[in-house]
Image (cartoon, rainbow, N blue to C red):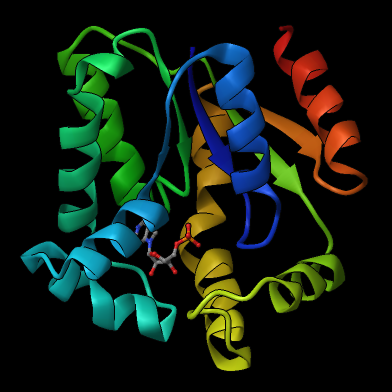
Length: 183
Ligand code: AMP
């Protein structure tokens, strides 16, 4: 199954991606985690991405699509994958569609997590990541609304969007996802 998890920072995508990976036996591809690993390793790509991440802004589309393409081409993705945090712009979504079409592949669904602003801010303040300061939290939510939310329309128009309630316990949300996707 090829899936996209779509939702603002703090909407629980990462937590659910980890559960779904076990249930569906496909890898999770988290661009945020890949960028953080690249920064840790001190790679050239990490150095390019770092400034954007620290400010809560998006890494340029070409760099981001580059790491996703490279990851999807690995053989463990042959039977599907869960994209967590990608795409985040309409341009990235278009590039992904082009990449899939070249390979005669298609997405199965885009799961959109619905979470209120209050619970998002609460959750982001509870976790302790370097890029979770008050200032970057605000920037990342603003960036989401402006650059990523248009993807709801993009995927809805091609019939792939499925919405799930992203509030409640981890187990409740997980059940809702399984019902929605039918697994
Ligand atoms: P995340 O762990 O998904 O919250 O991502 C952390 C940071 O990595 C984001 O705030 C962005 O700076 C960067 N990032 C992650 N995914 C993307 C993407 N698809 N496009 C651009 N930047 C990204």
